[in-house]
Image (cartoon, rainbow, N blue to C red):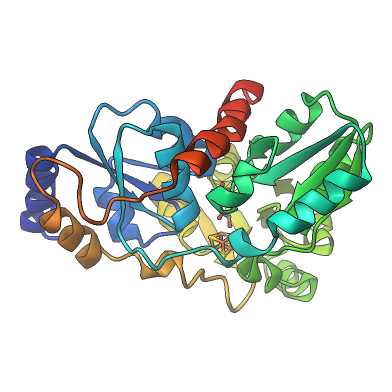
Length: 309
Ligand code: 13P
Ligand code: SF4
C-alpha cells in the first residue's frame, strides 16, 4: 500500500480518536492498516481494552454488535454496514423459547455468530476458540447449541458428559469445503498437515490434523516444524499465515473458500468511513441497539469472557 495512504488513514484515526479492529477474513490490505487483527474471541476482548472513543470494525455485523454490547459508552461503526454473516440469522427466538419449554436444567449456548436479539435470549456466548472450555464450565446438563450445527457437534464430541440439542444453522463457506476436496488435496500434497476450522463438516474434521479458530490455525502453523499445510477455512487467513511464515507453503482445498460478506470490506470503504466521521459527538452511522437488547445481550457475552478465562 502507498505510504501516503497509510499515513492519511493514521492521521484521520488520530484526529477522530478511532481504533481499527479487523478480522482475519478481510482483505490483506485492510489487515495491514488495522490496529488489531484477530479471531472473534480476541477481537471481543480487545474491544474492552482499547482507550479510543470510536471503534471502526472491519468485519461482519455480529462482530461490531459484540463490540458495542461490551462497550455501551463507545461508538462502533462498520467499514461496510451490509457485511453480515448469514449464519447469524439461522435461529429464531421462537425456536429457543420452544426448546426452553421442553427441557429442565437447560443452557442456551449461542455461538457469537448470531444477532444481538438471539444473544439477548441466550445464557452464554461462545466463539470457536473457547466453546469447549466454556461449555465444560456451565453447570447445566442440557445444552441447546445455536445456530451452528457443525461447531455444536464438534464441541459435543469433546464434552460427552453433557446432553446436546443441536440446531441446523451452518456457514455456507465452510460447508462448501468437502471431504472429497480434502482427500484430493492430500493426494497432491501428501506431506502437508490439514488445518481446519470447526465450522467445517464432521467428515472434513475427521481428515484433519488440527482443528481450531482462525488465530489457532495461524499459531499452529507458525509453531509447527512442518513446511506445508492444507487450509480448510476462509482464504483471508492466508495473509497472516504467509506474513508470519514466508518459507512455508499454504494451499486451499475447496473452490469457494471466500466469504462474500467479509470481502465487502475494502480499504476504500475504511478510508471513506473514517473521512465521514465527525471530530466529536456520535457518528450518524454508529451502531444502535435498543436499551433492552443492550442490557440482555451483554450478559451472555460477559459470561463468556468470565468462563473462558
Ligand atoms: P473465528 O472466531 O475463528 O475467527 O471465526 C469467525 C468466523 O466467522 C468463522 O467463519
Ligand atoms: Fe459467517 Fe461463514 Fe462468513 Fe464466517 S465465513 S462470517 S461464519 S458466512
